[in-house]
Length: 240
Image 1 (cartoon, helix red, strand yellow):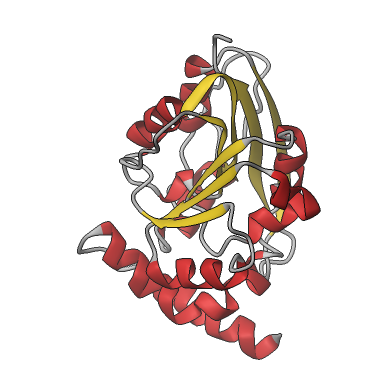
Image 2 (cartoon, one colour):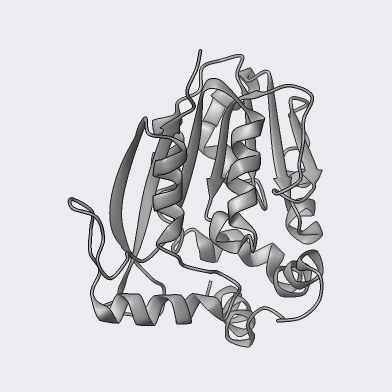
């Protein structure tokens, strides 16, 4: 594990390239660490299983995961995965998608698609669309959220789990993070192309008034004593 972590940490320290098309920047960053991606992120990306449990799509559902990477999140569905009508795993990074195709090779109902979450379309609306630690990596996240809603049928569920920091003066009842969190975490993650932003949650609440939010903190590998804020959001699209 130490050798595997060292490879990943080296690329994290180097960071994501700042220039070029988004697809090329993702590939340059994730390509060399794709084989070790899941082992390290298992200790970093918390709340993914809980998001799947809250979405709880029934058998026969059509699911879309935007920014699905290696397909690790689909394993949280367990045996239920084979019972969904269709699952579209969408990502823009070829090396991560290669891992997903190997992982999902025995599941004909899972489609692994190289596409931008902002522009992806499918022939009918899905029952459930979700982002798992991918919304913060999409430069045009406004358009990604709008596209997710266009992919979702009326009454369907949108789920998001991701890192974030609060506004300096959040609305009443919302969590307020201290000055250290609001300064440190956005700069720490920006090195790797992850953009922590308080606007994400506010915009999702506006788009989907029927929602639940849970705000948490989690440890970060090799940063003892520090806990990064993250949230789980599940909202229902209006209509039936």
